[in-house]
Length: 60
Image 1 (cartoon, rainbow, N blue to C red):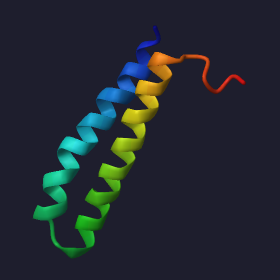
Image 2 (image 1 turned 90 degrees about the vertical axis):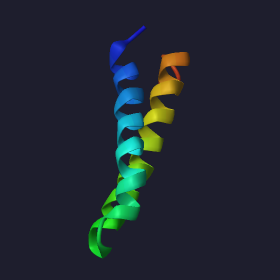
Image 3 (image 1 turned 135 degrees about the horizontal axis):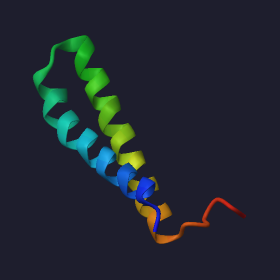
Image 4 (image 1 turned 45 degrees about the vertical axis):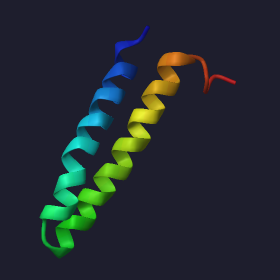
């Protein structure tokens, strides 16, 4: 098991946990950045889970 992949899951979850309330709390130009952080966090977490479960997924 590669701990980098678990780090992706943790970093993605942290971005989602921070970004969801921040997207509603921040003013207009900054709420978009928080929403993009949530999107990036979801992608990172899903990628980390995928690579943790199937480490050779992208090695064709």
